[in-house]
Amino acid sequence: MTENPLIEEFLNYLRYERHFSPHTAKCYAADLHQYVEFLIRTGHGVGAGTEAAYPSAGGGTAVATAPTASAAVAATLSRETLLSVETDDVRTFLAFLKEQEYSKSTTARKLATLRSFYKFCLKRSYLSANPVATIRTPKQEKRLPKFLELSQVTQLLETPDATTVLGARDRAMLETMYSTGVRVSELVALNIDDVDTLGEALHVRGKGRKERVTPISKAALDSIRRYLEMRKGNQQSPDHDAEALFVNKHGRRLSTRSVRRKLDKYLLQCGMDPSISPHTLRHTFATHMLNNGADLRSVQELLGHQSLSTTQVYTQVTTQRLKDAYDEAHPRS
Image 1 (cartoon, rainbow, N blue to C red):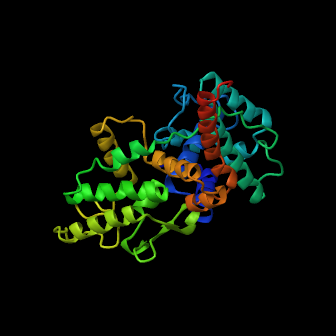
Image 2: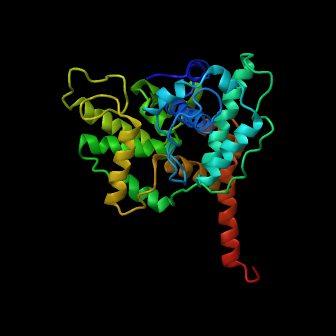
Image 3: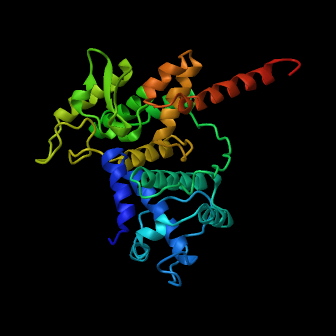
């Protein structure tokens, strides 16, 4: 793929110095290529007049995808052109996103990409001023995290057929996600040695190569133990991954997409909302912990959040539940 050298340098910085995940780096790349195409289309610098197609204008929350044919067009935009962008050019790009009916959250993400890119350029002394510095992030709609009631969690956990090795695996995965609040990327990265059955703890490798140890419930440990015993008796393929905790039927480490497919399967079987995702179980873990008296700092550490403000969104959920209970019960509410 033909790549703009400056963008590629930035992406390598994200991957190898900031330790961003491949998915996050891919999203940044897609946002930057859309930005570059817009600059070309509007005649900013090299490539002016080239009929580069506008990025898809379906509106709503766009799913970032890696560039394909448009990458060759993007590469024609010189380093100097990217570095000669002014604040008004960025504002024009944001206005374009609004015209195309992108959601505020998507626009904010794209603006965050540009902030990071130009901060990187300043850090490398490629720029003397940041063209994004004076631009405010669009005010977001407040959306509370979706979570499951305990009865729903119980129903979901009991859906896999734990008498089969794959069903036992899926039960163990769901139990682990609800018990520890791990991200799905952290779940699939787990090795057998990461499970401390004696100390009832889990060694988790999180974002940015940060590691943490989190408690895990006896129910989850029992499910993991049962799965590993069944897996040991199951014939493994020659190239099976002996270290990975959760493997597919061929013995290789599961992907995040596979976990999502398994969850979708069980949601369908028990008639639950198909929009529930593995991350919903993380939200559910945090909400249930706070509802049952855990303090915010503890939940922050358990989730592996760098900032307490990220965890505070869950307090809004618990506060809302208290308000709902008050409105329902108080005679003068």
